[in-house]
Length: 578
Image 1 (cartoon, rainbow, N blue to C red):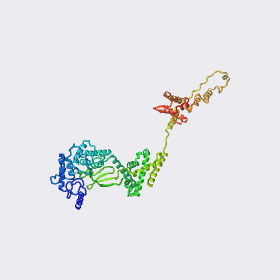
Image 2: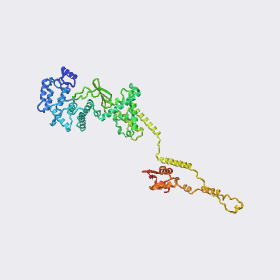
Image 3: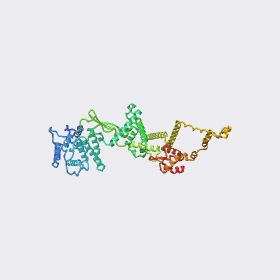
Image 4: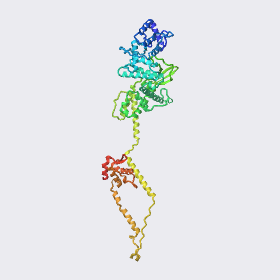
C-alpha cells in the first residue's frame, strides 16, 4: 500500500504531456490511471500488447498498435502526446468500411487510441469514414473526443481556418443531435475546443464564441462600466471622480444590458415595449440607486451579485485532448469578447473572465417585473400586474424612480405648445387679405391724382333777365348744379351697396360663384384675371368667412384641386342658398 500510494503521488507530479517515460512512471497511456490500480508487470504488458496487435485488424491498424510497444532508435518508446500524434499521422488517410460494433463504445472523457479496444478502434475509423463523407447518424462521445484531438493536431484538416470549421461542424452536429434526443454532451466540450483553437491560432474572435455569448458579455461589460461610474460619483470602494470611466453608458444602453441579463423578458411586456424611453429612464435610475446602495452598505457590488466576480486564472487549453501546444501565443493579448481575454505574463498564459454565471439572473428578473408593475400603476395602464414579495428597500427605490420619471413627463407635457392645424387656413386668409389691402393702398398712394373735369363755360344767351340786369340764380349755376348732382347719389347709396348687404357671411358675388362651381366640381379659373385675387387667396377668404358658421375649413385641396369638405357640403349649400 505504501508503494502504491507513493507511485500515485509520483504520477501527480509528472507532466501530462511527457514525451518520454519518466523515472518511476509505470503508465504510458494518455488517461490518468485510477489511484487503486497497481503498476502492471512487464510480462502482463507484453501479453496485452500481443493480444491487442492481433491478426483481426487491418494492416494500417496493426502498424498503429505496434507504435505503442515498438522502441525507437534510442531505445525508448513513444508515450503521451507524441504517441498519439504519431498514430494519428499514420492513419490520417485510412478508411474503414466495416459495420459499426453493435456493442457501441464505452464513455470516456480523456481518451486516445491506446485506450480503445481493437473492436472500438476499428469502430472509430469506420465512424470517421462516415463523418468525412457527411453520412454520420450519431456522434459517440468518445469518438468525438478522438476526432477533435486529431483536428487540433493538424490531422484531417489543414491548421487554421479549415480545422476551425471542422470543429464548428462537430459542435453544430452535436447540438443538433442533442435537440433530437440523442444527447452526447459533446456540444459543450466542442464550444471550449473552438475557443481554445481560435486563441492559439489568432483566428477571428467572432468565430470563437456564439452571438448569444458575445451579447451576454457585452451586457455585463456595460453594467460594470455604469456601476463603476456610480461608485466614482459616490466615492465608494476607494474610488474617486478621477477614476471615472472615459465613456459612461447612456440610460438606453444600461436598460438594454439589464434586459439582456434578466430572466424577465421585457419584450413580452406591452407597456415596456410601447414606452421604451420611460422604461430606460426608470431602469437606469433603479440600477444607479442599487449600485450606490450595494457600494456603500454591502461587501459585494451589484453586478458581482448578479453574474459573479471577475477572475484572472491560469489558462490551459485543451485539457482533455492530447495536443502539442505552441511555446507562445501569436498575440500577447487575445480578446475573446467584451469581458474575456487571454494574456501572456512571464511565459505563462492567463485568462481574465468578467463573470462566473452565464445564465439569466432571477434576482434582476424580479426587480424588472416589480418595476414594470409599478410603472403600469403610475401611468394608469389598465393591464395591471399582481404584486409579488420584494425587499422593502428595493420596493422603495422602484417606487421613487417611477414617480420621479412620471412627474418629469407630466411637467414636460404641460410646457408643450399645441398648434391647431385646422385654424391655419383662417390665419392664411387673414394674412392674404391684409396683404391685398396694403398693396391696394400702396398703389393708390403711388398713382398721380387725376385732374378734375373742367366745368362747362356758360354761353351767353339772350334773356330778358340779362337784359334787365338780373344775376343768374344759384339753381342755374353750373358749379352749384354739378355739386348737387354728384353728392345726391352718394347720399342715397348705389345698387351695389344695397345688394352687398344681403350677401351671406359677407361673401361677395365672386366668392359665391366660386363656391357654386366648387360644389359642382367645376373649375373657376375663368373667373380670375387681372385685378382679381389669386385662387388660393380667394379660397382662404371664403374659408375665413364661413369659419364662424362651420367652425372648420369649408374648402380643402385634394390632389391640387379645391373641393368642399364632404361633411360640410349640405351646410355650405344651405348657407349660400345654392
